[in-house]
Length: 408
Image (cartoon, rainbow, N blue to C red; front, side):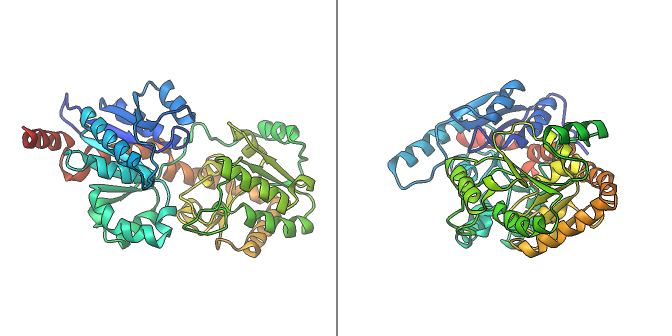
């Protein structure tokens, strides 16, 4: 339910992210805040990217961050943080909302003492899987008035760190269920024809950028689990030759692309007619239209591509990592243990058997209904806007007045 505010009340909100490319899931939230009449500015690093393009199209004011969101032991880091602090003082926000851990660290430092409420919306649990960061976050999170966890899993992690219940809220980022919709039979046939797929081919899809292995968690392994799927595919396709795997997504950055090329070489993807790997795809809906089941075998994840698949009426096989199990139930998907290729093979066998007897498609309306009910990003955006504008149990306008009084 929307928060009722007095007529004419204006809340100044600064939203901060570490990239102009990713994080497009903030756009519905920012639009909702602006729809309510609040004043919203988005602070991003300089440079072009898909997030900046979407915000520009929506008419959202943006400010280049003087801090590049790189924490290094160098004088330039102190200078950039000082400039970011000056920028926030100039913008005079009632609330600073930040996404991504590097943005959270910077915002916590620079907004301290400003009187602004501080709201950390957490897009995924990966950083908390580092014991070093987890120990630090036990204390640093106390600087947040509210933590909005993008999944129930992440909310539980913050409660385990000692954050009290009233300062931890759970709101998914969600998915646009008006854009991602089930394909009709005509669109499905056209998509499969364009991709060279026959009607009796069992089509598995994985939509995910490729990230290079991290140094602090899951050392040596890509967190999205491409290697787990490719290992499982060797076994599964050998048993079920009338099957095809669609991998959609290139490397997130140069390191990610190097890791993707390593996977292509290690698993002989270029020579495997049963695997197609598409990079540089902007609109993934055509690929979902051709698919029978989606796979998200991540080692760490929030809700990931399972929400897009669900909105398109595609059942999913997901790992038990992070918030992924929240995206399906027994009626519309399968949950396997992360990193277990043998369990993924078993789930693929089950889905393929349902496909052959015409039962798999019955899961489509069920996963669509579940996704609409729990993860529609318009409802999620309204919930986030409610929390942001009332952060800390005191209206942000009152906070600013107190801060102004202290400084006068």
